[in-house]
Length: 413
Image (tube, rainbow, N blue to C red; front, side, top):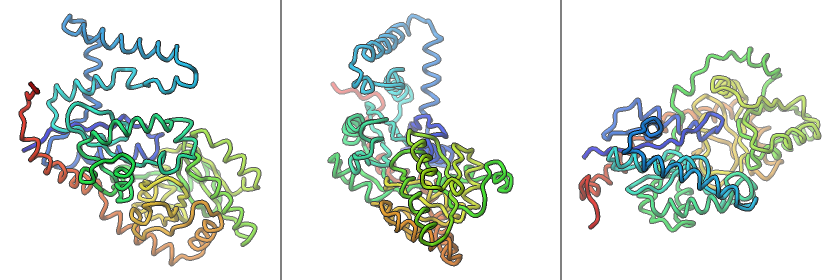
């Protein structure tokens, strides 16, 4: 049978970095490729549904309008009376706008057989749904403040995953390591956790028309450079990378330039203070958030991508580098060998000396850079968005034999 599958993207923004890249790639491919099932983009429907309710004063919609208004007022009051330390635990943004209610309404109106969350911003729905998990680092490395005491806090994450993962019909992760974490931490049936390797971003996201000479002049970039595109979270580990540059300068007399891009998530000032303190200001170029075209030009002209993040097991920048002929040096974290499959030179992200050694090896050896580029290109050819979607279709093929066991109007009596 042909299934009606609602796709929820969560309206990621480009400033969200890898999350946006992943969602944009899958969404674009779903609109482009021929599939056995029908995919409907739920976020678009929710916006239309919300707008229709707001504009339509027909009495039939009055209960709905009253419910949504009461919901919003209740959330606002809860925020006001909650103790300061608990206010962020009150349901936010989309929940405050009645998002779960609107999502469920679309599921029922469109008679969806399955809802597929291609973002981690998922909510339980009444009916079958698929959840995509990028990482569970709040469990693996709770010492980092961004997963414990700031942003999306530890308890918020834990409540979310406990509510969503065991209830999901299927959970998709990019690596076997990720699957093992889902099973271990949340007791999900291993049969319901499917491993589909992250795809290389779709080709439209790789196009570039920005000249490297113009880019160098715009940002005053000098000489050959390493490239690290990452938002300024503590777990992105800019500090140990800077220490590695300091080691290379003092130990080897080698001044390696580094280009940084990415939005500030609270740690940028600290990182730049260390750049100044360690005398690296003439080697480190902080560009801030740049366009996709500029990002691709930087990939294509860097000596190598250096990716020291402590978090994983799935990361997108190394995959982007594979597709843009950029050698990769990356952290040896759980799942790295599985995801990068020999296409990257790996180091201990907590050891600046090891980082320095690997940077030295790649910058000094053109043959090594060529080998890494070649291995990365092979991986890029295999991990396309089309193949990712085809593997999701295989999951849905198995589900179709189950879904045909009840009708569209089934209600328990």
